[in-house]
Length: 270
Ligand code: HPA
Image 1 (cartoon, protein in one colour):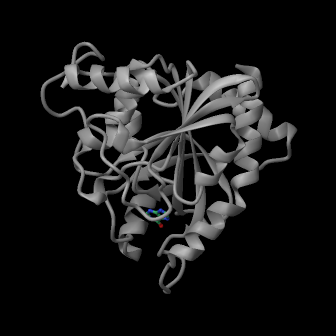
Image 2 (spheres, rainbow, N blue to C red):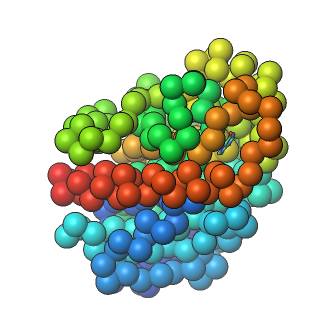
């Protein structure tokens, strides 16, 4: 495994004209954000040994690297999900890959359903903690000592410094950015109303099908992480009609501009 990732990292590095220290994962409906990169290079996941392709709708499945706000950056345009049938080790393989090419900071975005009336579709939530309700953990199995220790501590999975900076930027730019707790479920079926009530009662503010495995592996590897959820819909506890993927993508689109501002301004401060 370690040899395979080293090979993959060598391949990715050899394709890149850049040495990014910060990586971004673009979630559902947010792929277009990668278009703000200057002098961009696109590297399809299939080009990298061991990487699987993204099958989720609107997830392109490529790395996009280049310059943004004068900094070298790499974006994952589309992510891998557990519900696609991949193992959590496959889902988080790119996180280790990014670590191996020298990435130190990870900025994650995702689409999520709201479990609080005041978090409306189109709103952003800065994650301060999470609940892993996937019934699995990407670190189960042999520990890869080269990356990190057997029992990584998740006492502060979301970097305090970067969160402070993002909150400040949000305030300066009149962007509403409350902090919240994200619950990760496997999907792909959406939660029932009873499940939503249960998850809300457990303390979560938003619910989605990604991010937590990436955070666990990122922390294990020593990355500093921040994550923002775009509320794409009210979860099923607030209504009794079917969600449409169009609705989810349209609400994610609405948040594009605000996320771009947060990214650019954060880069200026790093
Ligand atoms: N539930 C789970 N995942 C999601 C949702 C939801 O309501 N919206 C976007 N991703």
